[in-house]
Length: 555
Image 1 (tube, one colour):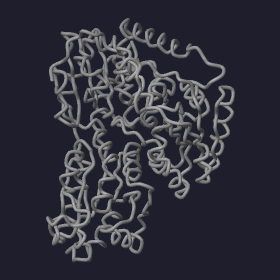
Image 2 (cartoon, rainbow, N blue to C red; image 1 turned 90 degrees about the vertical axis):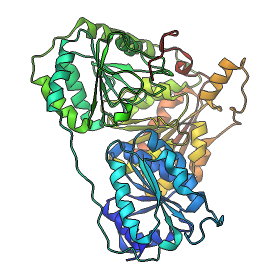
Image 3 (cartoon, helix red, strand yellow; image 1 turned 135 degrees about the vertical axis):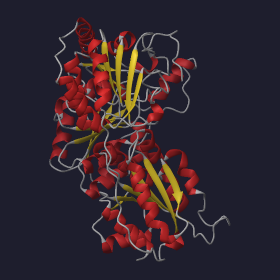
Image 4 (cartoon, rainbow, N blue to C red; image 1 turned 120 degrees about the vertical axis):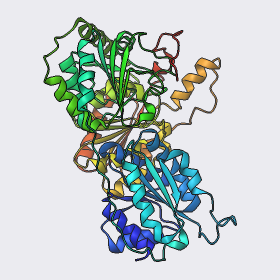
């Protein structure tokens, strides 16, 4: 068996949903072998960035890796932005790149760079195959590493001249199965939480979507409020026990809960810069933190802990739920009720904003989207100022339906929506994007049409890079440099790709136009709604969430 045939068969055996990229030197043989010897679909994207973002999104919605490919230096380097995003979000991905012939390495051969070194800082493992007969050994190790422990992308470079060489004996990939049991420590954790006067649960991005019900059951059993980590929505955010998001643009109730809690159960949270508002956030001096995470490296790194537990939450949360529910119920406390009232007041304040009856506001667009879409609709965000309105005005009834790329990756929206649709073909998928992010990857609309993946794209078009502009205005005397665009008419872009396109400039037309576009998508088409919004910006990034002057934690 040739190396190219073995790689194609390996892709089939790991059951990757697709291999995505752009054909080029060094991977043509793999693509050809896939087409003749397997049923694995190859997805042509308009840019390798789109391929890695699709796989990044697919992993978020399923927890499973897809394969992306790049041809030597140009194609490989184009993959990096999506690979970086998956690394930041701890999502599995398999990255295969071609490398120049190993007989020509070191001569500055055409398209030669050190790819193993390039990907090393943004992957769990980056390696170049040094012997064709070890190709499968390396690929199987890469598959194991992307999924075990804290997930993340892995990268394998294969020299071009290996493709036609003998791979040796084919060895099928296997994935070690491991589980975590904590029967002993659980009793102590539950007792600490039961005896607390002000217990608190922090649910981070590491909480698996399928375990959100367990988190809420633990909260109900303990009478404890739940704080969400920054822009993750790991539990339904209108559940009575959820008191909002921590971090920049977060809720007052979440801040109060963190300030005053005496015992805190931290689940799958690494206390990011955004969640801690640049690491200013701190807990009460006598608070006891119980931090559970699959990665021991994040436990106690930012905040000191009373008890650190390395464990897989997929296994531990059901055990914790049983341990809590088997004990006597804890009545609703004044602590919980106070925080719930504060959160209710915050939500009422958000809903009572002054509406502009002439020019659409970004938050009004999000409100109308939430009202029009099904409860199971998936919202995929790009990066921009409007993301705060998405967090505030697009509540979800089930975990896993809301995806903001916390890597801060602009251009994610459209390819991310395609990846989400592949992951959940029977569910409605909407991409909410800014005008800057839309223009970066709008070519992937053609990919969506060609694949038959119906998605709705809603553009918050304010003619500027809003997130950057408000910082320039605040910090540089109102001067804005390099953030404003000329007039953009994105509905024409949609038409160019054979997609339903509509432009909205008046508030009164927002709902009817969105409704028409939603029906187009429900009938199996793609749609783009370009909403020219007002200059209003979400204030969260400029408003202090955590009181200034607080001491930063150790770390």
